[in-house]
Length: 333
Image (cartoon, rainbow, N blue to C red; front, side, top):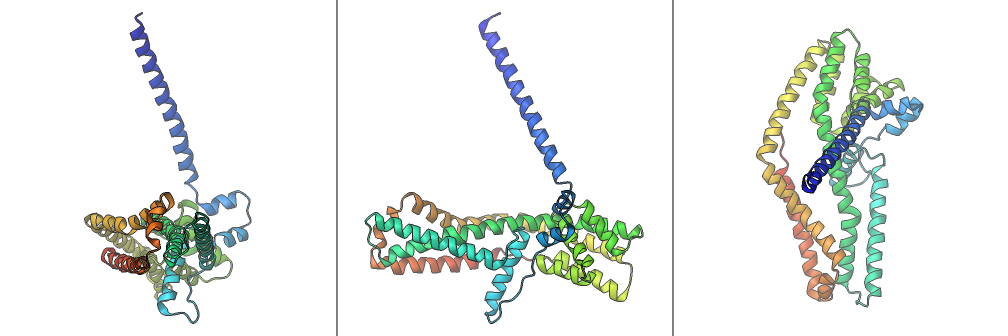
C-alpha cells in the first residue's frame, strides 16, 4: 500500500478516534450536569443527611433593611446591594461583603504605594490618587460588577422558571392539594433557584411563620414584580376567598405575555445596552490593565499639579456618565 494512502487512513482513524472520545466525554459531563440539576440545593443537602434545621439556617437569607440614621439614598443603595447578594446566592451579610471590599481596597492601595515608593518615584498627591483609584477598581468595582452579572443571570433564571412553577402549583391545587402541599410540589420538582427558595418558604412555615409572612419574605428578598403579584394573589385569596387556581393560571398567562414583551424590548434595545456596557466597563478595565502592565504611563505625569485636578474631574465626569447611561437603558416593562 502506498505510504501516502496509509498516512491518510491513519490520520482519518485518529481524527475519528478523537471525535468519538470527545463525544463520549462531553456526553458524560452533560448527562452528569443534567442529573445534578434535576434536584435543587436544598434537596441535595437533605439527601446528604444534613439536618433540616441546619439546612434552613444555611440557606436562609436576611431581609434587606434600612440603616438607622442614614440618608434615604444610602439605605436604598444598601437594600439594592443586599438584593444583589441574595440573587447571586452569596450567603454573606451586606456589611461582611463591604468589609471584605474595604480591606481589599486598603491592601491593594497600600501595596501599590509601597511598590511605587520602592521604585524611587516621589509620592505626590497624584500618585496617591492613582493608587487609591486602582485599589477601588480592584477591591470594589470589579467584585461589584461580578456580583451584578451573577445576580442578573440568576434573576433571569428565576423569571424564566416562575411561570412553570405557577403551572405546577396550579396543577397541585386542581388535584385537591392545599396550598402548603401544592408548594411542596415546587420544592420537590423544581430546580434552583425556585426549588430552594420555596423550600425556604416551606421551612419557615414549619418553624412558625404564617404562609403570608413567609411568602412576603420571599418577595422582599428578590424584589421581582412576578413574585410580588403571586404573593398578592395568594394573600387576597386567603382573605376574600375565590378560585386560586384560576387566578394563578391567569397570572401565569400575564407573566408569559409580559416576558414576551420584555424580550422584544431587550432585542430592540440590545445595541444601546451593549453600548452602555462597553462605555461603563471598558474605562475601568483599561485603566486597571494599563496601570498593572505599564504603571509608568501614569506615573510620569502624576507629579504634575494639573494631574490632580484633571484626574478628579475625570472621575466626576465618569460617575455622571455612568448614572446617566444607566437611566437611559433602565427600561421598565
